[in-house]
Image (cartoon, rainbow over all chains, first blue to last red; front, side):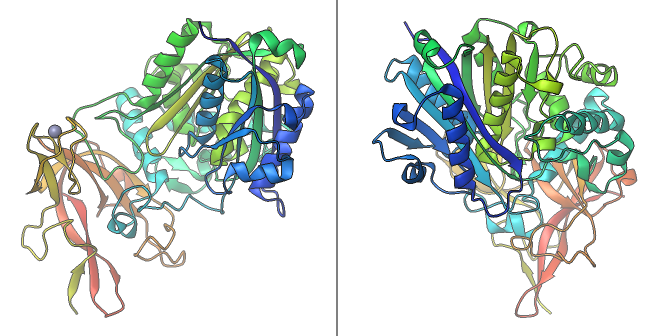
Length: 382
Length: 141
Ligand SMILES: [Zn+2]
């Protein structure tokens, strides 16, 4: 019999650019805010999983938070770093090893598109020297093919980005808080056809911490615990089309998002029709469109009608990326997946303020995707 | 001025009919690019080096509209003189889809499914004054 798991505390350091505050310090601030939210002390934490891509080894933050001797495990798993920390914390409690612990993600990246370490990715230097090792190219090529196959329009891409900045403008933790019109987005410089500058998220900074507890003890820390019903991480299979691939197989596989989503729904014992809102990886506007179908929320191609009709807006039938997503928050890799869970906890508590999804949402979904072809999904409920 | 490939073992050069160098799994026949020792399809540990087909069809494409960071990029990354270039996956029949630069960078002239052929193109000039070349696909006229 596995133990049920609740999230009893959430903390976040503002996303964006914070001069003079290291990525690690942003993580520490997120931890202190999560502890305050749970009414717990650092000394209560029996274990921690934490990670960053570019801002140092998470376990060194104990020298700022307190040397309590807790089990602290560093997680480094590409774009699923935060998701993997949460997955590990979830299963640590589920298995009964510990009762109370914390998942932490933070980061601070240099400006501009991610500089890919081809050696670290197991690729030859020629790949980057030839002008190929850009994640932005993959995103442009994946959505270009998808538009060709399923009839998604350029206007739909611009609508997705416009919604992100509108939602971001209602989110005090977001980086980009200025609404942009569909026209401004479509007219911004074309970075990687068919994607323009404002259709892409930027590498950024920020930190998030989540305190997890066995469900039967959650009342000790929160009068509104949110239950983690599933957490799944999957890597790519043969034939899937992924970022940083000098070649891909002729045969087609749907990719890690489909696998992670199916596993999570199975774990939670519910289906996509039971989900009230979702945070879906939107590295760029096209990703949100494709991930709606890959996660099972619609058929391929159906997004065109859904987005044109406003169904993914906060007041729509199926709100997506209510906090502005990666587009408005930027992508500090280690923290990004945990940001999505933070937003869902706010929404399920009813604490999302002016961007609150109406009608008391009960089930919320997160999905993170990234290099080198990895996806993480969580399902939360009240 | 001599021409040198961006790396050895990626494509045959010099050659009148240059081809990419890949691997074929001895156990299941799966093709890979570039050369690698293990097979992601069947987990086999034995591959042989093969030259891949020179022609295929465009599976998808984009246009690199801003200068890539240099390093790693060896081409012209100066925002004042940078010229956008196409990037795509070309499906080589019966083998694999390979990612490559495209000689065409006009979205109006690129169509999924069009015939493409491998060519070798200049990339940069190295410290010896030699021209560094890499591979690309060009539309078949
Ligand atoms: Zn094989």
